[in-house]
Amino acid sequence: MLSYPNIVETFMKTVELLESGKISLHDGLEKIILTSSLSDLAYVDGRKTAHDLGFDVWKKLKPSDERLKQKLGLKNLYTNSQAFPDFMFKSRVNNGQLVGGEILELKDAQGGNIASFNSTIPTEYKTLKEIERLNGQKGKTVIKIAELLDENSKNAEWRIYKRKCFYMIRTHKKHQDKIRVSIVDGAFFETIPERELIPSMFQNIFDRHAGEYEIPDNIREDARQVFRYLTDHILISFSQDITNASIKPRLRIMAEATKEGNPHWREYGIPEKTFNLIIKADGEAKIVEDIIKKREMRIQKHKIKHRNDGEFLVFSYRVR
Image 1 (cartoon, rainbow, N blue to C red):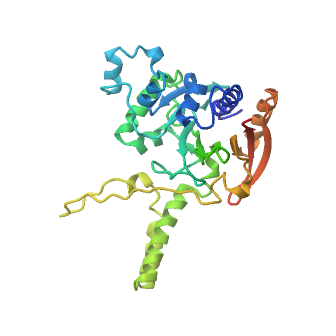
Image 2: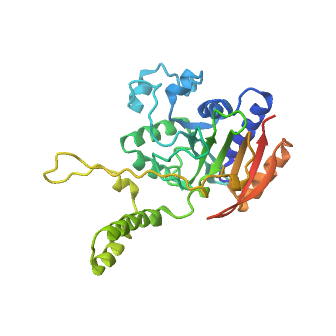
Image 3: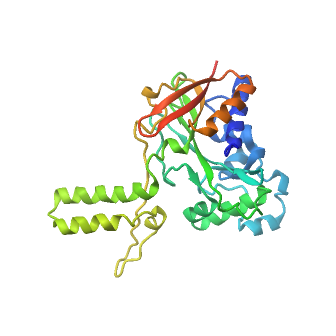
């Protein structure tokens, strides 16, 4: 059973559109996804952007109906929420189990490095409960819209089952020959669990202070034990009420990919002028390989060895 069928179909549809010349690697990433997959989406964050591009997210729901606005708590249905994620696919039922519902974030860059992850730390999986909490008040809007567009939203597991996260990254977006676009498995970035990553970050901050200032050894050990419990970046990012303070300080955790965490790093050998699907080389990868083989498309397959996370399978389409 494949847990991310929508992503695989989106990849193949996009290859067909590229082959036919209906879209190009230089088109907006939003346009590429909306052209290939609008009917399969349960949530589109940039609804105004989509509308400006000629895509109506609400087409089947009578957007002129004022009750729809009231239900969603929106004054205007065609707005950009600027919440996480950029896109969410509809879920499916396979043998009584929910699959699909994949999360897709877009990352666009002028150069060879991946754009920063500003809204959330990239992970392999997220649940809707996590997404709602991550977005605060905006999270309720995300869930309400997805409930309307996903026919499986009444399923008891809908909010809590793990959804695969993917990141559509483009590098050298304005360069005719160097451009690469890839839909990347979140596992490529989550090589250390978030619950370990965040305490390690605070430990690094503390160690830098210890290098500059005199800190007793017993305090160092106590701090190390405390950091083990600082694992929730959502709690960390809240504005803080401090007694007698006239401002509310806020820590915002952002993330940048290392060179090893950039699938377009030259040592991984992803060809230029290509559109790629990059997935963990696990049991599901064989299912994906069989699906793509049956379509007899002009897609090459190869493996890359992630410096921190084992083998990944790359399905690559080169633009003519």
